[in-house]
Image 1: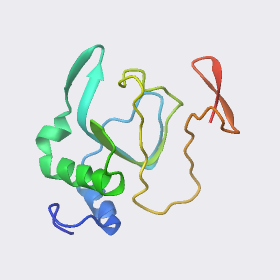
Image 2: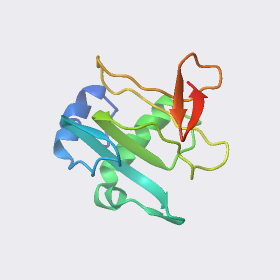
Image 3: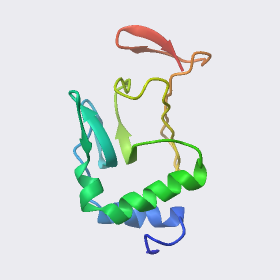
Image 4: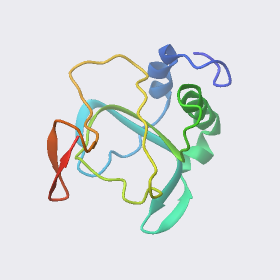
Length: 136
């Protein structure tokens, strides 16, 4: 595996994920045999802000993932990085994000048979989110 302080290489991600312990799956997630979720950075839960355990336990991995985001989206401001694999979660809204902030998604592998739905006012697909129709 490449050193975590070396260049970003998507080939390294399957091995990196194999070395990490998955976080508990998000509420309501449909868990598959190979499901994986891992987050590092900040959080706000119930009005309490803090630093995720993985940021303290795995600072090199956190820096590596932060470097990936900066390489792909140099001006993007963020507080958390998350890796997902084979995880289906219900539609949700990141209600505690800073007003006007955005989320970003970066594919670190090729995949098929899955998908991602993101709200977008001009989107062609309508889903129900918190009891309201929302385009995406």
